[in-house]
Length: 112
Image 1 (cartoon, rainbow, N blue to C red):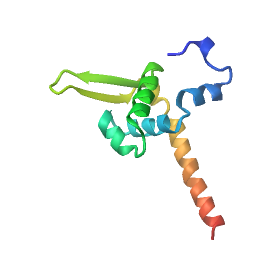
Image 2 (cartoon, rainbow, N blue to C red):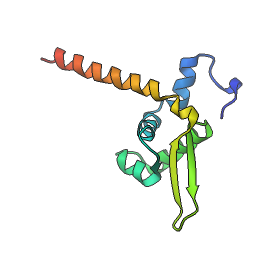
Image 3 (cartoon, helix red, strand yellow):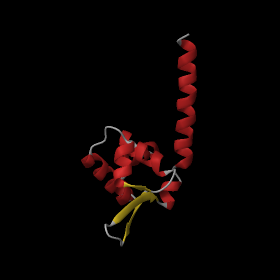
């Protein structure tokens, strides 16, 4: 997790720094539904590379937004889920979804 000194002074900039990339937002969107395994996420997020997914998950985990659980099985199973802190992002993503729906509706009306 970043220290207070490492974060931008502006709270909006802090949020953008932590979750502002396209892939991080889509990863969080998926994890809102249930825990996911790495390969499931990679298949569902068409176009994401293994490196970007790995880096994004590591960053989200380091920032305390995602948890990584390793199950002692053969073969090993790893699941990613939203942490308690990550769960607090639900209203933000809900609002983004509502805004996106409204935008599509307005764009469709203007295109008529």
